[in-house]
Image (cartoon, rainbow, N blue to C red; front, top):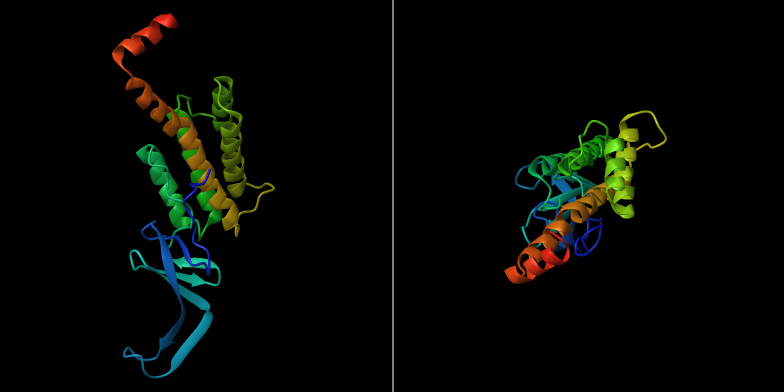
Length: 215
């Protein structure tokens, strides 16, 4: 589900995918301190709860309060699958931007993203549960169904009274981002890649296959 080469930002580790440039890069760590005056002199203030990691690739800082990223203001989730339609990718990226501040809101946006994805896959979009059921009836693989229902249920219960409380559960929300990318890979990327390879076969071979299958 998660890209094998994607390492999420984690406090204290030597390298990860930078929240600013997304490149896997070495991080240099600093404890933040402040001075009373702009030139660095005067009263000094230090608080070890605030830490900065500096990306060796883009040189942008990531600022942490304990183990939570407070700058830049988006989650440590992996980037969206590039094959996602632009409106769904926009929902994914908006969810990234608010995930650290509101995991519940991010989960709700990801639920909206898979509802739109069901429409993209040919469903009416009026009832996400029914849409997933119809995709299952049409041959949707079990793991994709489980991923869809996980995002559907968690995203719904995050904003309605239920058994799932995501108010400070960033780990679960980051897993939902991975599931959305997994769903996109299985339903959009893999079929596109197979179609591109198949359509690249010699014309006589394609004709032979069509004749064999009565098409």
